[in-house]
Amino acid sequence: MPPGTLAAFRDHGRARPAITLGLDDARRVFADLARAGVEMPSILKQLKVEALGAFADSFSALMLGIDTKRKAALLRGRYEIAGSGLGKELDRFNVEFQLSGFVSGLWSKKADLWSDDAAEQKRIANRLGGSARPT
Image (cartoon, rainbow, N blue to C red; front, side, top):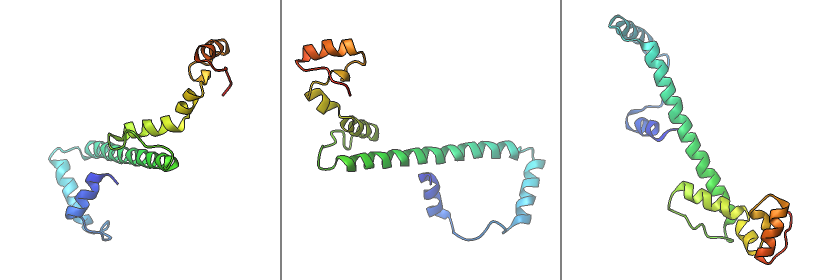
């Protein structure tokens, strides 16, 4: 649930079965709005777009947080997440970078970190003082 929606509910919401309460009053209000020239269908359409966007943004943030925490749990005890506290995107990049094996590949002089081309890998391996080995 988007944080704004949750905050609004905490402020003035009340959990109860209310969908059928006050239907006659609601119909009267909508009729009054129509007579006043308020185009409720277009307003409701825009509200729906904005509400769905807020839920989608909230869901994306939740998934990023879960993914980052999952990767951090995989690394626990093996690596320190250098970007911890500096922002979710930096934390995520650091976790993915460490899980990719790049650093261990660099230390073991893995030429295929730098190029997909076999001939280029051989030249790189010679420069690194190692051997070109496939992934």
